[in-house]
Length: 191
Image (tube, rainbow, N blue to C red):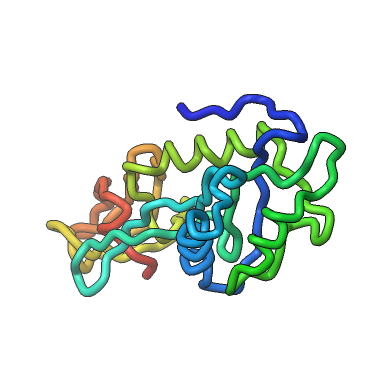
């Protein structure tokens, strides 16, 4: 697992940038392209948009897309403050001049993220990197419709939810009897 060590004020720290809605990738790309040109890559290490893979069924086909953890925000690992906690002009104006950016969280006095906050975000990204989570969150007792498999078009009530495996246990009425059925999240939708 990726862990960040404690950093001092004059070192690199993680800051949160607020972007215009839907402009996160554009802002990230702009910063990364301008790093070398403006010769500021010694003050900015990484630009990160925390995302996860999300699975859903559209028109009978399972699709996987990417969803942002924090829409409208990106993280930047940079050296923005000197030893006394004062803003450094070069990285401050470099970031502020990025198209699509509203500003730093904290305004004119940006506050770096705490180490445990950064580690929590990085571990969430790492955990969700390979496994697609369902787009729809189901609740116990909810009525759902089966969209795929041998019980397609049946409706049932959710008895158990297993988020770690992405499975649902539902009760379906077959020939007047309640029958337990196990499904993957993507095989069901709200009725």
